[in-house]
Image 1 (tube, rainbow, N blue to C red):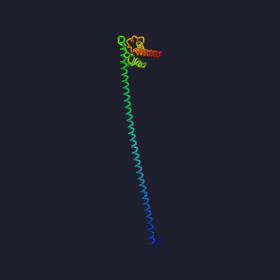
Image 2: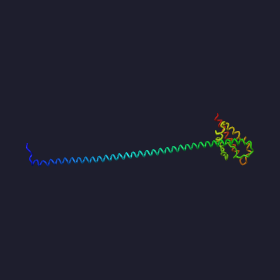
Image 3: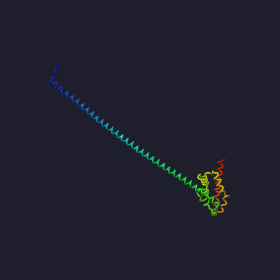
Image 4: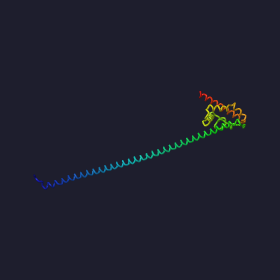
Length: 220
């Protein structure tokens, strides 16, 4: 085997170093590319984590706001419920008071009615439209106030005469308000009120007759 001459060795050495330099340069370029890509990937991951973090913060903020809204809504509903209960309680108390006041008014009117009728036969005082014991809760100002509804509200009230039926109450009233029976009191009525009294007595008598007919139909 022949050995290479010094000249051949000399010419071949630079070629070997050039290939090594090329490989080193390629390796460095490859490393550089990897580093750039790695840096880009890390930046991408950081952006992804930041976006995810912001989304989570937004989600939590929305949840918290929804909880606050729900809490305010519940408080409002509770306040409205409490206010409604308070109004219902006040209305109920008002109705109860109105019923008690009306019951007391009816009882007082009935006592006065009976007392006044008892005194009609024992006194000779002059009578007028205003002072007559009309079968009404409130004294009428005119004959327009003498209606069937007003008479029924007075005679049929359960606040008095609980031992009497409707038929008995109507019959007792008819004995007082029949025009022929009431005529004995007309002479004591002032001339200015006589016409109104006669008209009022006629209205009461007709209403009582109508109520009698209604009770007969119910019993039939």
